[in-house]
Image 1 (cartoon, rainbow, N blue to C red):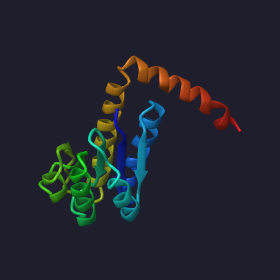
Image 2: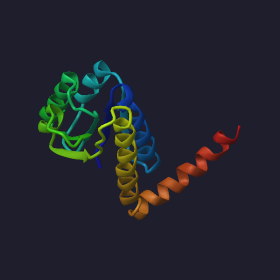
Image 3: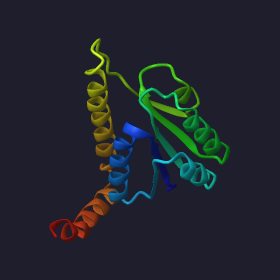
Image 4: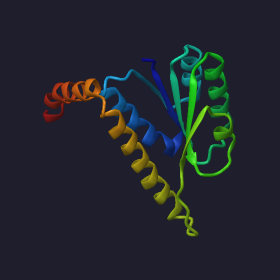
Length: 151
């Protein structure tokens, strides 16, 4: 299959980094960037069949919308992961994964968002693991990494 390009800026890089590692463990080629200049260069190398996952809680960063547009011009599919709100990133994506997490208290709302997002990503990972080949690759990769983690 194609490559999966992944970007998230600031706080949004935490889930982006986590899913990039998990996809890699499943044998899916990932290109993870947390820098818009690097991702712009990477996006221009996209081909049909490639997917761009864009993590942005509020979906308002113009640079991410620009990268999404460039990616689509090269035939790639853009998937936004944002709050359940209307935002520019979601509007410009081919597919949008929505995270619903609302609270009146400003300090609680981001915590709910992160927890709901984690649950969504766990579900995607589980679905990807239903493929026998990927599951086998996961087990091989975990085995390879084991000695490195013990040192």
